[in-house]
Image (cartoon, rainbow, N blue to C red; front, side, top):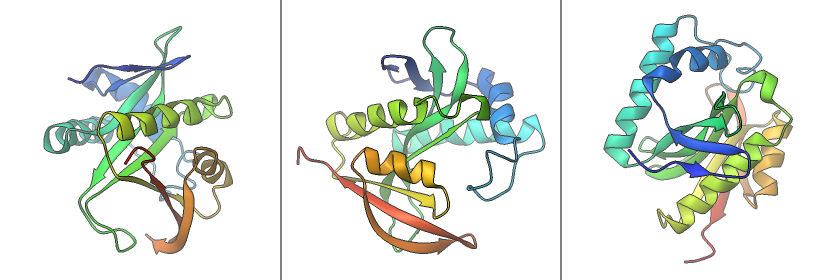
Length: 175
């Protein structure tokens, strides 16, 4: 297990199976899924399977999405992190992608930006990745604003799972 990352308010750590109930709260909310496929989960078993899949990614690629918890209370807020994508999206394959998703009651508090910023630094300084990519639904202005605030550049739009997405790239300034 990798060492957790601490920010001012957050602890970023690898997922545990004990996160399943919180993960279910996150992914069963239709509002959370408006811009990510509109397919909320309907059972805790799906959340457990999702966590097991993420844990397998840690083994296969030494990276993946991590749980984001509030330092002060240890409450699960959502997830963020760097995923290695080994399938084709927008004519790219075998790349590192930044992502995040938070429980609705934690929206608008800057947690996505704080966690994403820490993962950008981790990807560039620890993992030494050349470029990070991200994509967001064209209509998801909040997510797109976060990426742009972090310095990601809009490269193009593309269709993915019947929705228009905006593709972003951020190059490692240290390489």
